[in-house]
Image 1 (tube, each protein chain N blue to C red):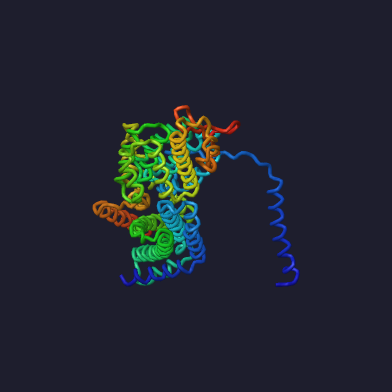
Image 2 (image 1 turned 60 degrees about the vertical axis):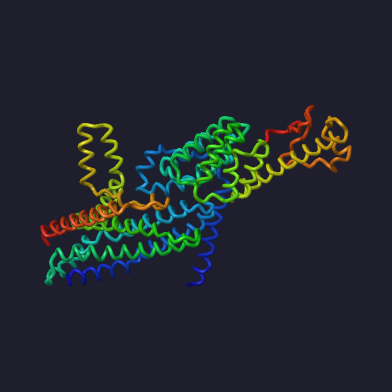
Length: 252
Length: 273
């Protein structure tokens, strides 16, 4: 466990030292602050203010995650720093786990910083503390955790560009699965069975999207929250396990 | 930084600004096509950010307002997309109910009613949606039963201002139609934050106040002279009124043979909208 935490700490430090991290964070804060201007156009409508703010946190959170995560394992192999690490009494599994935790902490830090700005903007514009907005941000973090796991999985077998492309495709598919299943149901037959397989096998990210509910003052049920958390933990676990297996089979 | 660079840099920036300026000055203005996406297509591509996309599209669709007299199809396409993406988003329903109805375009009145009824069924609970729907039924369609139904619904909604609630509850017991109509505009005037609508409501209240004042003067004339005036100017000629107040909409007042004060457009005047 100690080794995992050391690698996580170093990955976190490396991530937050990256200049691109600050550039994206700067744009994100600017975008959320733009909400102050949009609030004028929206005539103070809280739905518009909150939906723009939460969308900004999501989009920039996604950009940060993909930028930082696409090369996370591949870079270590290319730079041959992984050879140095595994020559120590450190297993490949510990490396993968440490990388996951470190990157997730960096993504979480970015998201929390953006959420602080968002809460301030909403408080300023509506004189209300958007607690439900924080719930939506928490579920967004679960989604980001899953995407970090997807990136680590792809980064252990492909080049950064391919990993980025695959992760973006995964994110789109993850938000489309409900519609795919619905269309499959209408068509029926083999298409339905195929869409059902897609629905259960691909990471279904719609359950982490509380943004469309919380802007209208609606929250998730405890039952839904529990299963969404379980889904994120289990799916991320499988992907990290897969990344460990792939890395173990790789000759270095 | 060397002197050459110090000089070159502002020159380059000036060049950039001038290029942009002359590009804009010489640009041929062509009509740009509006964003027209099938709702399902937009829903699939927005990464689940339905509410944010609906809000963004609403800011654009609202800009269609000045073009409404030329046809409202484009506005309606945008509204349909927004309603599909986020059916709970109340603002588009409220706004449409306020701006769409017009006595000059009867089809817009029925379209506004359809939007209002959709809003009552699926949007967040917002008193303004049933309230403005009731106002459309009363003001444009003279359907007092539907009007009473939606005023009653508005009165039960959370957040309704006290003055509006009082009016909505009392709607069915006010005997005179003009009095009811004036009260609707008074309630709108006291509750809306939209400055355009507030000015319009104020004009209507003023309009009905003048009608009340003239009607009272006509009855006073009858009491004094035993007959109704034949022209509205008789009220000034016989010193009942100092002057005929100007109508906020520029309409002309007259007296029917039965002593009822009416309004008509001045010659050459367009439709009051």
